Amino acid sequence: MYKITKYSYLFSTFLLILATTSCKEAKKVETENTTETAEQMSAQPISKSEFGTLPNGTVVDKYTLTNANGIAIDVISYGGRITAIRMPDKNGKVENITLGFDKLKDYLADNPYFGALIGRYGNRIANAQFSIGENTYKLGANNGTNNLHGGPEGFDRAVWKVTPKADGDKSVLVLEYYSKDGEMGYPGNLATVVTYTLDNDNQFEINYEAETDKATVINLTQHAYFNLSGDFSKPITDHKVKIDADSFLPVDENLIPTGEIRNVSGTPFDFTQSKTVSKEIDADNKQIALGGGYDHCWVLNGVTGNLRTSAIAMHAASGRKLEVLTTEPGIQFYTGNFLDGTLPNPAGGYYGKRSGFCLETQHYPDSPNQPKFPSTKLEPGERYKTTTIFKFSIE
Image (cartoon, rainbow, N blue to C red; front, side, top):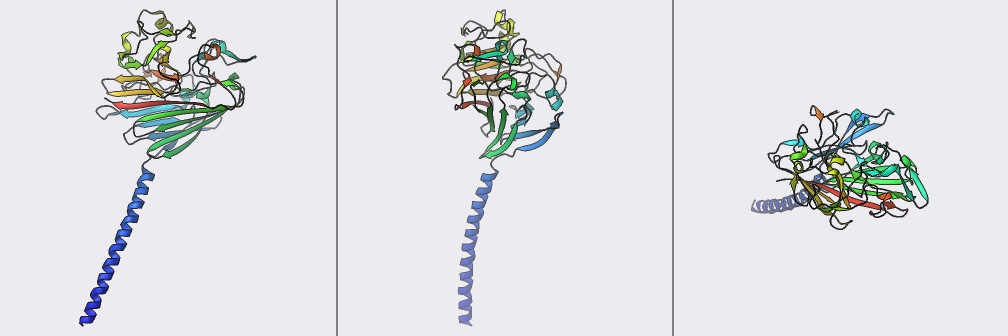
């Protein structure tokens, strides 16, 4: 009996040790699996839905990027357009802070490029033409005699191929568009890739890349309109803005740069220190009169190609803050002067004058016709590559 009891005890002890070891191994495997699952799930999901259908039957999709801090960004494949950016204010209230539509038909009609990817050339090219060597290229004129934002059928009206990706804790959309030689008058077959990335530091990063098989010009940008208050019935004149630029580009009556690079000191264009937009937007100034407010390109300080903070916008009542970082040489600050109350706001009512502002990072307008400006020419074998970051925060 004692022997049986003794062996039973030893056997039970062996089973206990085995069970304990197995449990530890199981917990180790479980921990490893849990870690792997956490890593796999750390990226916020990207949802996809149908936004509408073009007259030719092409389906336009909507993608929503989210992060862990309550920011959500809607992007549609038509024009690579940002249709909404939702973020909390200092009290936790989540609101949309960018102008857009909730119906495809409104984007198909005339509109001021709400949230669009702009190409091949952001901003204006005088007389809708430019030359490379002995070749002169005639472009589509859609802004009086000028070419604006690539022409009547620019990248804002293209259907982009969109591929969602996950990269750690980042939500990523890769957008691709192939612009054929001669499209809107521009030379060269141009392969363009734009990557939208939202991370948990509340940074929305935009990387632009392109290659061509023939010498061409290129100047890509994003045309989001912001109103950090989240209330589009109110103008953005109560926002404070700072632009790290000692100079700006004066324009003529067609809003084409004159070629002069003028110091901002002593002018309404001095945003080197943060100031309320309303302070001088209606000043008695010829350049203000020509733009109906601010619609000019600032010559950014710092080294082109280096990513640096170039503009900051702040809305005190909501606490929302927007920082713009870019590798580009210029930024177009536009205060929605031509919004006229005819375009529908999905939240109700219509978008009125100055209900949104743009900070479009870019090369200078009309650079192809102004040799003193930084070149926008892209040659075969070269890669066009720029980066802009919209960083959101609360103060």
